[in-house]
Image (cartoon, rainbow over all chains, first blue to last red; front, side, top):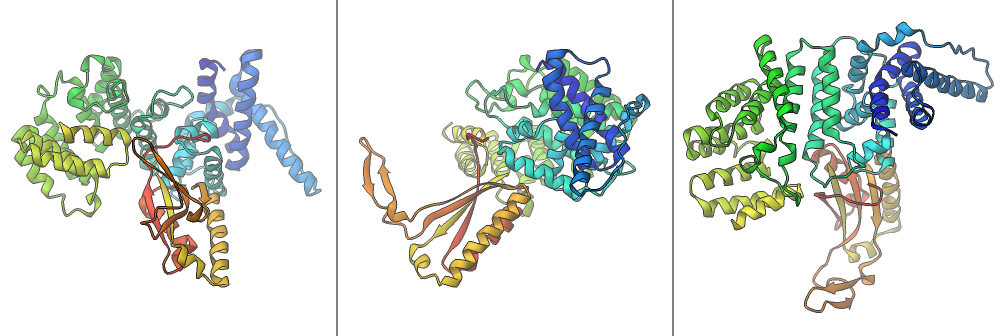
Length: 394
Length: 121
């Protein structure tokens, strides 16, 4: 299947599903029918050409699947059921704007665990197949199929939710999808769906639907500004390359420009939220020619606001690095000491890794090596462990 | 997050199990499998043959092969579940559902997975 057709199908998936759910209710049955229609299109369109009304085609095919299913169920129960098979009125499809958001809100239902919200969002809104989602998360297809079908069962009775109070959950799910893609460092695999691209695409859609929301814009900017550095984040052997050693000439300038413009505009227009602040920090890094020439004062101010707004040990950890860069490594180490008693940080490798880094800056290389060793033992990531082990011998 | 739930067995404890305890273990595993299959958290499980059937290849310039398990060990890996769950807490919750945890002398080790590859993945 060509890239264009694939992109088109993914874009149309939530529109088609939204139209069907609005008409028939029954999210779970509609979702199955849309997947079948997408599959049919992926076989027919490359051979026969894309129909003139691709969305209408999908709604008709999916609608037929639904009625076929209901008819056979009805036949099993030996009952007569009147089912109408009308072609879709076109104005139905123009309501897709609301539908995509409503679908996202539905997929991020609070009764579902975050991994289930992620899986369901990728399928129902992202238009990915179960096999693609399973391969992206490195689990067998049967495991993912079950997770999705369980999620659909759980929200079966629920119609489209009203109101945007679920927006934070949606942004969190998009953030999780992005992070999963960003942090998987297994080599280039063409079969693997690019989760970072998918997260950016979906966040772009939400931003287009809610352009005035500062946190949506902030999240999109954060993704763009982070993803801009992706190519330089790992070496040819898959080893991690830390920020200060990355080849900044290879950072994606277009992404940086877009991200910076986005975050500047939103910070000027709306009260800052955590995603906007993180995007602003990423922007400072992305615009700096080197670690030394980075505006660490600005970064420290931003982390201090962020830490006050949403206190979290990971933010404090980053604030300690910025503190070390502005006030010297000992000031950073003092701040780290405040995390030693934090249960949420207990035994986390990042605390040891940052402490080791700051000890190195302070010239305490022997102690630094000891903390790098501890961090290497505690990380769950293979490239990270190799990086940390290299530091113990350095 | 993927976790390997390693069932540590002590052959002496297994031999001393009553019929009732055997049934408890068998039923418990069936129940657990169903629960985590339904929830989409189950990846794989294997039960291993008695360690008396093991061979050991010892590292060296010319690796040596010997029959039988590691002599120094009293507990052996009897089998495992590979699961994919939301959190550490959930992994512990599932481990507690393994019926071995009802028997004194048996134990489950919960170990995070660091790298995955496989035919089905």
